[in-house]
Length: 237
Image (cartoon, rainbow, N blue to C red; front, side):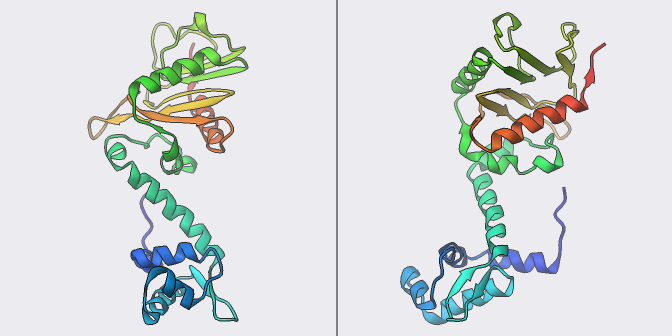
């Protein structure tokens, strides 16, 4: 989705473009005085006041009746997005080579939210995928990953894959236009985003990926992603 430009958005980005202001904003999750900020960051009073005014002008912080400052509720919301940008930046090399374009609009934050679960070694990704398949008991959902159905013990299996001669089963649907790899059981999930190869196309890539335990809130998003592709797909004849 293209970024919606506006004067207010530009002012917000400018307010967040200074390292000192970001550090002060983090400090203001607790009520803090100007003097305390000066001491903590070794800044002069007039420098701190200038930074606080910039942050206050765009609604990120507010001044209390006693003169102290604290982050605003709006500021708390904005910082969650800043954290997401920081997480994506940490995986800059990965996202220069991989695409999340196939994600539905309401799940576009996944690339940022999944960063802490990144696995960079292909052997570990393969091992995780095999464990998900073999350890599934209640259910197993698979997107674009070849599995041996004779080894599956899960009571309910749903598979989404490219159209082949072997896809004529009720539990298998076709997603010819999707290259993301996803495996999910009741214990955990693994997702591998496609590698960008040309301007128009993508390649599946399981040399690295993101492993998410079921206890984490992002696991629900991956389950929702599979549901999205499953409902969008056509049942094979």
